[in-house]
Length: 457
Image (tube, rainbow, N blue to C red; front, top):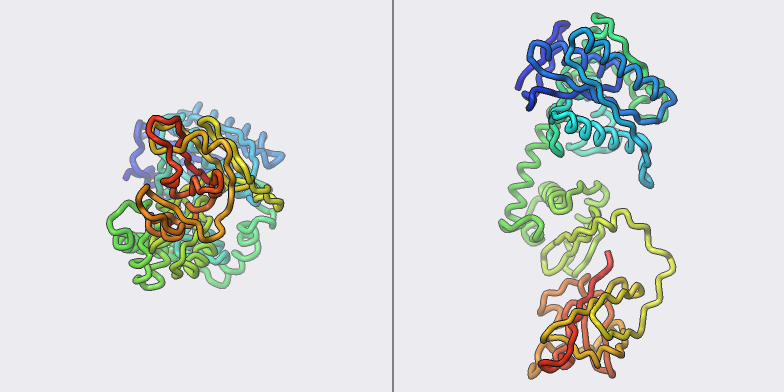
């Protein structure tokens, strides 16, 4: 760690930047103006270059004026000898369905900051959040019913996607930042949207915080401390979840599945945290609280089941929970209330892909030297759903068995059995999840095709 000290009681302890430079997220507001000035003043003696990163959201009619103010401010400081370089990026926000403009702006802002920092040759970005911001974050998360991870608030430092995000003033009171700005007579912008009560943080800041501070003068420091304890508790729970996952996954890669028998042996609170950690590791997404609780309620069953969760498909089969990624499904539109009619006939005369939207998948035919079906048998196919009583043979000379028994013997999960049964001349030819019936296979040297059934995402 290194420090960017300055008078007025403010210090900015940050990790030593690589390449002799660092960046500051600079909106032009009071807090970021103070941090940028303090960082630049300290950088003179440390031999560092400071990059001011400004994001133009385009949400306010004053956005162009704010950008111009920030650029002029940095130019004045640079002319006075401070090692400041200004960068800006304009966003074209397009919130996803159900996403608020506020959330879209936050996501877009961090993405833009990351791009500008890396383009400037630095992997360290300072953020101007202070102790009041941390206290407000904890209160907002508590009011939303957040768990320990949410109550942990904002980390003082975190590495994400090649960039270290550091909040060096997270333990500093808001009053200290205000005093710094007054002492140095720093000009800054005032965002008029900060008075808009439509935003939850503004309502808290304008209506709740004054009364809370009057009734509890130490509220800011106490709530910020509570966030620190929550961070420690969250880290301890993550360590415990990793220990439990080693037992539940039997030392295998987490993506290979969760042993539900071992998972059920955990105490309920540990089982919930282990499942959340496994889902996050397997899918790359944090499950929502409601989805997680529903899954915990339904997992104790033994029958094969599937769930759509975390942008993919969860499958419970033979005592194991597995995750299959289906990233496309996360943004796909809901199915039409009118389901396509299932195709009842198909002619396959050459290798290729044969979409069957009524069955929700694609039949793939590939040329093979052996083990396939003769072209003559595939020229006139009948497609049927399972009705019970069908029998399938793995090899000639071995008795055919019911599809249910063959599926169980082969360990084919329920979702892998979806699709049409293919018949030719009244005889079963192909079964999704099992393949070609032995009696339907071509003779050696005969032109033939192998069939594979692929479910649509």
